[in-house]
Length: 312
Image (cartoon, rainbow, N blue to C red):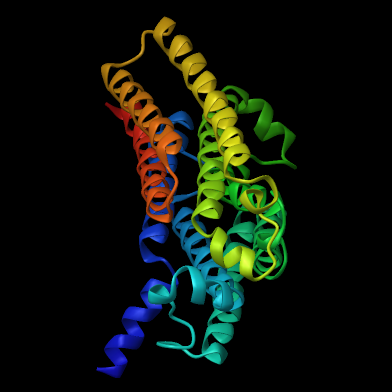
């Protein structure tokens, strides 16, 4: 029974549903955007993509572990029933797992970087590991900067594929494939921007959800520094930017004779956003913010699944 509890705790610790989401995002973007736009012959081969996708989820898992390691006091107040470290997994094992996962993720990235003859991917994934550590130890408790770091790393899940495909040092290759790379860049910008904005909104909502424990342990998150009313106004501004962004894309797609599937995804996303705005307006309890956080997860999922519309 102890071993079963430890295994279950391990999968909860690494947030396996989130890792599946990361993998789904990269698989859809690679096979629905990069492969077709590169004429079926991308610079990032299928074998290297698999290694890079594994590196992404392993590095993310390391980030979740180290975050929980340094969040034990706060989680004991905000989410005592969800605590894994100290119950199912010891602190020493948690730290060892973080180090092992980080090294394995960077090792896999190094293999891909060597195949692509570019160190940019390795450098930026190393930076991701470093930022996840700094976030867990310092920036999570600071005003806004922690939210921005996580949002950037969420966008990096998509951007990393473009970085791998874009041959920075090979000018002849870039000239020859300028149109394909430009098209991939546009889709990267769209989906990375969407991921960044939705993630930023969700991170602030999670701060609203966790403010009791954050306040007890001296954090200076937005709800603690500004209060709930001002924090909600911040959320409304970013939601308005998200709506403006999506409306612009919809108008552009309409005049480009968008596919019926794209229209369905667009309408679904708009309805989800309006529901989230309504929920934020009414929210005043921890359970309300937990519900909004879940709604934002579904919004992110819908946005990522919309990649499929390009193959329908």
